Structure formats: structure tokens, C-alpha cells
Figure 1: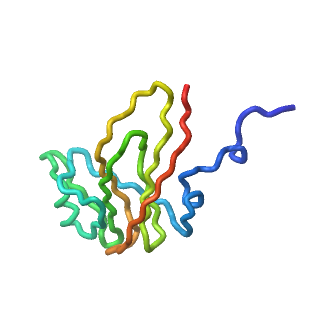
Figure 2: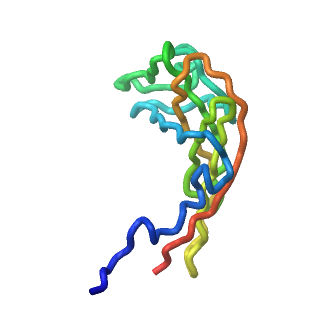
Length: 148
């Protein structure tokens, strides 16, 4: 009797995992989303926010929005503004306690697929340490496309 389907043992390894990228002792950082009604106005290219006042200075919120908050007695916040080129899908952040490695994920285009325009994007990640200090590194990876 044959079993149909694919098991995790048969699945291809993730080319964007820390292990595949040769990054040891790093964990995937938790993404943080600003509240609805708040727009980024002065995000740095990359940096670490360690106070409520610094976080508030990065946003303009409409009158009905709840201002952004984070418990800075236990956390810090990584902010990264990056150019999302054609084929890029997202950025992940891996933290080894010394370096935050930003992993830009892309995918191969499918035949006859229109090329998306490049755009600038800001992403946020929580470090579970108050007043964190980190270096930044960059990696990239390409995931296979599932073209139909």
C-alpha cells in the first residue's frame, strides 16, 4: 500500500533558515506591528528604539488612534527601513544576542508574471531585553516559486 502526500521528512529544507544561512545560535525575532491609524514619519534605516518617547517620535497618529506602546522595561524595538525590490517578499530578523541579522527573502519570478515595482518598507522586531545593543548584519535568500 502506498501513502500519498508529502511528509516533513520529504520536504525541502528552508533555504532561509538560520541553519541554511550558516547563522548559529540565533533565534527568529518576533515582528511588531504599529497600531492602526499611526503612520511612520521618521524611521531610521536601521536602529534600536529603547524608550517610549523615542517610539512616539517616529509616528504621527490620527485623533482616534491609540499611540504605539511597548514595555521598554523589558524590551527594545528594532526598526529597519529597506528597499523591497522586485521579487522580494519579506524580511526576517535573527538575533544571536550580539548581532541582528536581517534576512531579505525573495522568490523567483514565474513566466509572464509582471514585475512588481520596488518600494520602501519599514519593519519592526522586538528584542526581549531592555536597552539592547546590537550590531546589524545582512543576508538574503531565494525561495522557489510555485508557478501554475
